Length: 150
Image 1: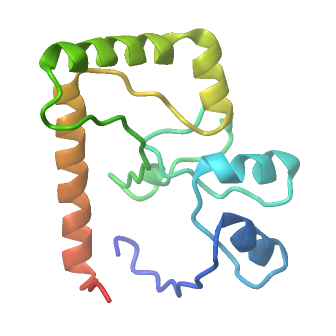
Image 2 (image 1 turned 30 degrees about the horizontal axis):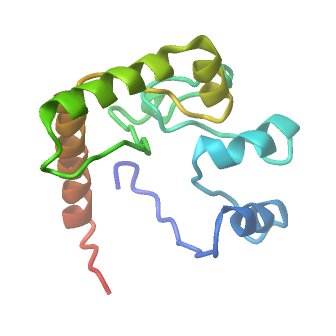
């Protein structure tokens, strides 16, 4: 939407099939998570044009971020840990503390970076705000693009 380019969506059953379609020339470009694209990029099977994170990815320093030429363009996938609403606060705090500690370990950080993930640590409130902000961002995109559910 921000660039005015027209992209035709070509659905595939999954990332493996989409990568096969890309390398076979069935499609000219694809958006994929670094986790599933990293091996193909590092092997040279596909050429990365840009990353959608706010800045260049340390594992691929020569690949620009889209935000370098499309201001404020950031698309990040994320994973999080949740618990039932009635979970006692002391349990939530303990889980948060332990998860943050594991994510701060150099070996874990390195393995995650090699897979295309950047761990974000913080409080449960930080994560809640991230979810609210991300939901609002994508609601705006869905509304502007007139996307409807089927």
